[in-house]
Image (cartoon, rainbow, N blue to C red; front, side, top):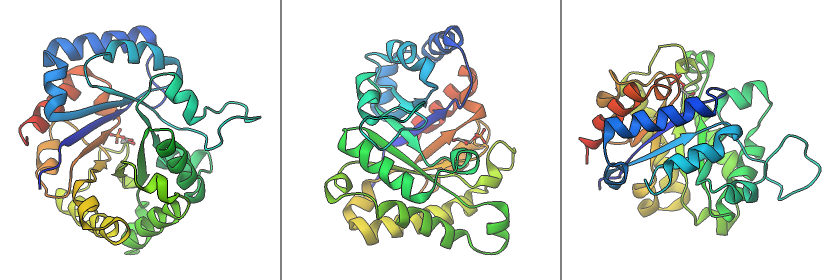
Length: 260
Ligand code: 13P
């Protein structure tokens, strides 16, 4: 079973509208016809809300997906500063990153909220990119698999049967590897991805587990992505720093194309 590789950039709180537009121009110039590229590799960018419209416009017709970096699980109401899944649909987005460790750490996002967000996105027809991952201390105490399992299962407990039937992507992002230059070795990442694949099989059945993409995130770059992508259970990447420059990110897309 070959799963289509999926490379998603996470721009975090970076870039203005002019910079976003320049990025897409250069990215297209380097890679050529993006709709040919997205036939073999899925490409997405999680962008700040101020870049939704310019990014959607730049990506139009290319198959490149534009994602939010967060969503609220309620449909509407008095939630100052938040955006609903319906609003993301209205902005022509394809989905959202949820449960990123920076949101867990700085904005107290917990597994229950992540699950509700997953549910809301799926029911709105959007793609949830569900992030899980252990801290350095948790890894050192041998708790990686327990932590990732709990994060995934606690979130899943909030997802309705209908929402469970919709596509989602899992992103394994060890917290100690994010923005640190300390990438997990391909073997370390593969071990956890394989464990997650087992969790998917347990909760969704073998067939769904085989087609669901599991991305790696944490200091992934043009130099290390090929050896990560080569592992059987690593289906792509959620890329922070290296997704900001079109030269770097397009190299990663090119590397992913080789696995088609
Ligand atoms: P870096 O690629 O900058 O380590 O960030 C990873 C990440 O957090 C992607 O969501």
